[in-house]
Length: 147
Image (cartoon, rainbow, N blue to C red):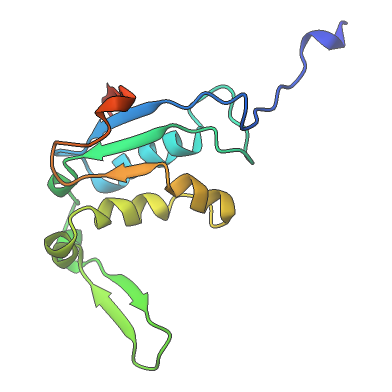
C-alpha cells in the first residue's frame, strides 16, 4: 500500500481561506442559530478544519433584534455578571438586555459556544452582529446563507 498518497494536511494561518458570510437572524431561534454561527466561526464546516488554527469564516449577523427564544426564556432566563465586589452580582433577563443592547443576546450565546482560551478570544473577533438589516461590510462582498 502506498502510504504517501494519504498524508494528513494541517492548515495554518497562511494556507487557510477565510470568507465573509451574512446570516439573517430574523425569526430564528437563538440557540439553534448560535450553534451554527459558532461552527462557521470555528471552521468546523470545512474539510480543512484544524483545531488549533483560526480557519473559520467572518460571520455578519443582521436583524439580531428580531431573534426568538422558545418557551418563557425571554422573561425568565437570567444572565449573571459579577463585578468582583461583595454584593456585586447582577442579573438581567433577555428582555431587559434586548431593550438596552439588542445585539448582546446573540453575542453572549455565540461566545459561550466558542473555546475558553486565547483561540476562542481571537475567533470571537470574527463575529459582527447588527440590530438592523444594514451592515458596513459591503466592501468584503459577503455571501448570504440561510442558517
